Length: 345
Ligand code: PHE
Image 1 (cartoon, rainbow, N blue to C red):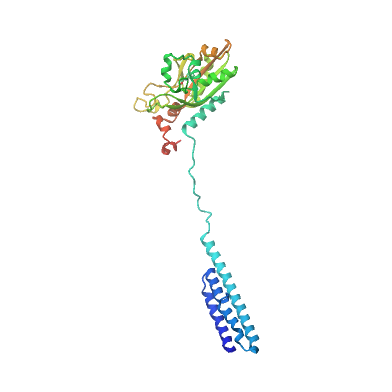
Image 2 (image 1 turned 30 degrees about the horizontal axis):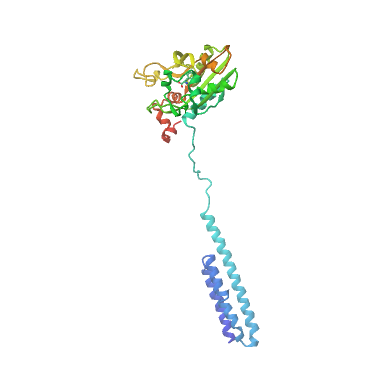
């Protein structure tokens, strides 16, 4: 009887060894351990039957059984170590990172051409000592028109055909109201610019849009003259369009400036055009870049400035500058957000 049990123990060990070596991963190995050493395992069952062995043989069989158990445990542990070692190796192999591969580059955004030009224009005037002020886009009739010498029945209102919110408020049609707002609060000397969106009831085409950007600027002090206007605006035009630009001042009309001018530069594209008729100036040789003038005495009176003060003001259309600067022929391109267009700047 005890001989048979001893034989069984030996064959159990052999069987266990072969099962253990066959186990291919930690999970399979755990199953094998369960099969042999678990509560209902083969070795456990054998040990449970120890009672049926004659008393004098029991110690020998018990000793042998324990040795076998220890051996099986040892083999299990060895295999476990091997398996976890190789599974780690497999993971290391598969999850290896090649640091020499080029990274994935994310597309980077950039400033919109209008923002770009706005910044450039602001920087130029800051460089000439102008500070930057802000004003509301929803404006009252008073600041947008009346204080600027455009009474309700003035024909010039036509020029700023407007988007009204109610009888007395509208989307500002230019940035000139900021002049009034700043002068109301502060005394000269003043050198101020203000940039922002303006709105007009314009039909959209290649050169018009119901919304656009303007930079307004003005300077007020004792003895500010037309020569100051010429100096500041010529400097501006040359910084934007090139130092060798010729600048000319052509009489014009704005209700809030007197005299009023339009500022032109000589066309920088004519030399490149082979056809004789330049596509930029249409053969005119001159390009209008902005409107300006000496601040009308009416406006200075509105803000209660003493009569010995004088000043000049100007308004720059940012889209216009951008169109000219980048040689773009359609203002609508600025607002379509087509990346193929925007990426070029
Ligand atoms: N506000 C004028 C416009 O929108 C421009 C301008 C500003 C002209 C200041 C003269 C002085 O057309």
